[in-house]
Amino acid sequence: TTTSIPRDPAFDSTLALLREGYPFIWNRCQRFQSDLFQARLMGKRAICIHGREAAELFYDETRFQRRGAVPRRVLTSLFGKKGIQTLDGAAHRHRKAAFLSLMTPTSLDRLMIATAREWRRAVHAWEKMEAVVLFDEAERVLTRATCTWAGVPISDRELPRRARDFGLMVDAFGGVGPRLWKGKRARARAERWMAREIERARRGDAPTASASALHVMAHYRGPDGERLPARTAAVELLNVIRPTVAISWFITFAALALHEHPESREKLTCEDAGENAGAYADSFMQEVRRFYPFTPYLGAKVRSSFDWKGHHFKPGTLVLLDVYGANHDPQLWDAPESFRPERFDGWRGDAYGFIPQGGGPRATGHRCPGEWITMHNVALALHILTRCMVYEVAPGQDLRVDLRRMPTRPKSGFILRNVHATA
Ligand code: HEM
Image (tube, rainbow, N blue to C red):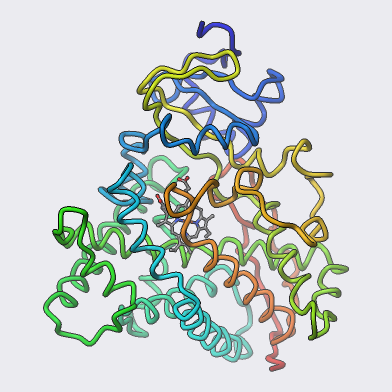
């Protein structure tokens, strides 16, 4: 029966979730000593689940669907309507292949070369600045490099506001009121811009590399042989560019980690070229993805009924999988509250135990197709921060990370001063 699992006593926990932020699910799992509990969210009964087994369950497509699972507020700010996040089955796999076609080694190389060039340019500009807000700068570096790579031209003049719009869409996901409205307006502007680019590519007005994200989304044909409506193609093009720019959140956390763990910084700087070159940087990058909060949880709806851990799941029920808690569970991680890159030395991957960008199989499930882009970009930023420049962390700034805010980051945005390029 449904009464056998713990129930959050609040009549409706939506506000508690937005107020408690990242640890909402994990707090209750610990309190109830249970990997699952029920709560009312947005007026409906929902089941929150946690742990490795829960992730395996969540990624079983025969039991869950995404259709109808994403709340309107998230569709109108973070994701966009009719995008890949809302598809199931064959339609989903077909469109997912288009995203994955952008992740070939050649394509990734092109992106990383463009991004490295922008970082170098930025570091030189920072030498002349009194204070550098790393988060804002990273957003611009990534916006210019990613748009160029994607085949979407961007002028110097529009760069700051376009970069800001990408950030606002992401910043809206855990917000209500003004923060949400800003994200919605940013999305409306960005979709109009991208839809114009899609139309332009379809007319053949501009030469676009056939492997570019613009080209792929403009000319993608669904299983029915039809092109996507321009607005939907724009949503999908944004689904490539926006999250790539959002890597600025992880990059800012990486800078914070370097600051708070000077011994790790030392190890990174001294790591030799040779057989194991970059191994410690890789571990450091993974630990950034584990330790710092970004995605709080994921949602799906029960597709066909089943029983799990003594609970009967009925079709249509909303289920939330804990992502933040999975990264901080002592059953999965030794001393989870310590930042320890070494834990990833020789690590072989775990599609259900380490899910900062979702889990399970990538081509058939909803797991993030952008993990390579993310890992390469965090590693590149670490390289820039430790080997291509010296800087001071400006004193007196507020570096606190508020777990109650989603998404979160060091409040000051991480301010550098006295920057000098060294390479
Ligand atoms: C899906 C996180 C970067 C594109 C996802 C999911 C998460 C996630 C949690 C959902 C998994 C699920 O629903 O089961 C992140 C984080 C990133 C990041 C934290 C770091 C900034 C990227 C990048 C791209 C990208 C660089 C560029 C292509 C997507 C797309 C989906 C997705 C298209 C939807 C996949 C689907 O529904 O099949 N991401 N991601 N993400 N991500 Fe990322």
